[in-house]
Length: 172
Image 1 (cartoon, rainbow, N blue to C red):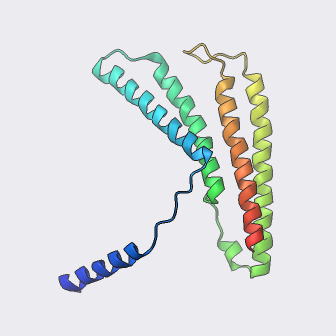
Image 2 (cartoon, one colour; image 1 turned 30 degrees about the vertical axis):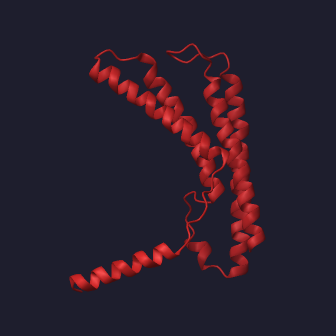
């Protein structure tokens, strides 16, 4: 393939891509929450960098808060993935099944997933209650605040996974 053929191919691909209308943004509350948490985390990490390496006088709370923000962000981001059905899965065996059996395999996987997330919610609730009198190391805030944030992400993840499973069952 010479340069002219490659250029013509790219022109055709660009024209075909331009002809496809862009899908509307699929934004939900957990997307906005994750977006805000991400930028707050970025700000805290940047502040940590500036105070440690430029001012040579690190703020002690930035490392701890960054870790806690990352924990909560992980679970709100997981709710986004549950809504879209984009959590990592190995589907090779399910895809080899006939269509009828595949439908039931997906339903079983969705039920087990929602049950697992529900159990995680219950366990996180217990941990959050147990940590209500345990302060963070540097900041005088109860550690339960972090676990309530994680639980909020878990509840969202459970609800989104259930909605995705129901939608997939209706489509099949």
